[in-house]
Length: 174
Figure 1 (cartoon, rainbow, N blue to C red):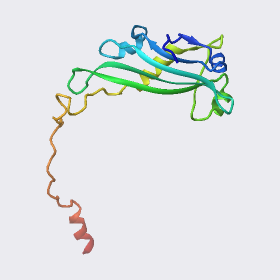
Figure 2: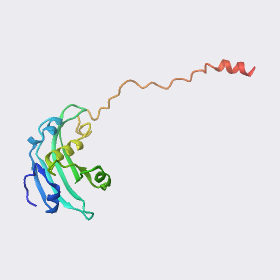
Figure 3: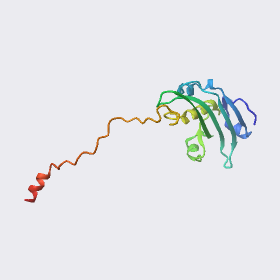
Figure 4: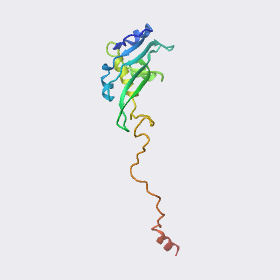
């Protein structure tokens, strides 16, 4: 495989028939939604993609995407860089029946009117989903990581109070 530009859109059936494989970059400037979610610029996304047909005759797009993002630590509110990696395996589906019959190893994707998949958008979506929900440094690297935050005070166990119905208990026994 040679390093090439990753196509913006791809016909998965044709690519699978020719057993195409791509290894290349998606420029960080093109990932606008990913850049909006990060605290700084998004680096280029390194993508490796393999297209083919499995033994069951299912067309697939299998690959891996890696990028480095600058995120804002939610504990200490400082920026840090982290690597986001995602492995994916997609299969184009046209109907709900095809989606229901698709093996669990594949994620369904929809093709546009001309039978193509917007590859850059698809990879950007996967990277957004793979981002940490609450970005934080590791405990050793974070300024606030060693300081546990306690909200409120923990009360000591109160002495057992007398049962207010104890008087009724005495009346019942008489």
